[in-house]
Length: 337
Image (cartoon, rainbow, N blue to C red; front, top):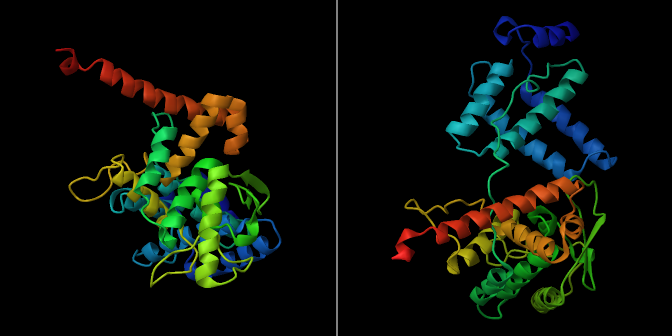
């Protein structure tokens, strides 16, 4: 197998005869190895989960291909094309799928069981230089006007907006939080790239009030909450009491933004530019507010960016978007009549 690996790096893939291997059995052995690495603290459970989901999608597609047992780099390239054209995934999403494949086949190559067929395959280039948009602080506060009543769902949604804005947490970090992770205005969480919940976020006074009002109503309805109970849960007959997913959180915040007139839908009913104004953009709004009031260094700490340059580029893109929007208004010929 080692000679095959060396050849695969030097020869066109169409000239290489890849061995026939049960790809599902290979993926299962890799998954079990990941489980052991997660247990040993060598790999975060979130990363392992992302890899596993990516490979599961790949295997479903691969089952329908003539070379299902012997995929090559060309097979991976066809898969990337399928993700982009048939599934219409964005470059970043395609990159996530590719990361899982690279992890699987790099592991397989290290054990001389299959070549690293995804290593040389490049995903579509994402545009990380364009302007970004987000709500102003007052607009974020305005979302709360569209949370109606004092029901459990309303209290939860109000707390979500407060906590997301006052901490700038990523959605996956917030949805993974448990009751034991919150205490007296401090929330312990797992940041991007971390292998455990080692970071702390501090809630604003209004965020503490909103969150504790929600938790008090939870306890009134459900009884005492266990330390391992999710901090935020779904409400309703079907999924009530279960951990709130990132997708559900996005749906909640997007609905508030739509009610406030910030988000529009196209003729098909889909949200236009879903990545611009979304639940994640509340993180963008919060970081921007800190950068404006306290400076880039404070914004870097607040965002949890390891590199100051990341914060600077992020803030520059937000300001770029705001400048272009303001210029468009200043150059409106209709307004000059």
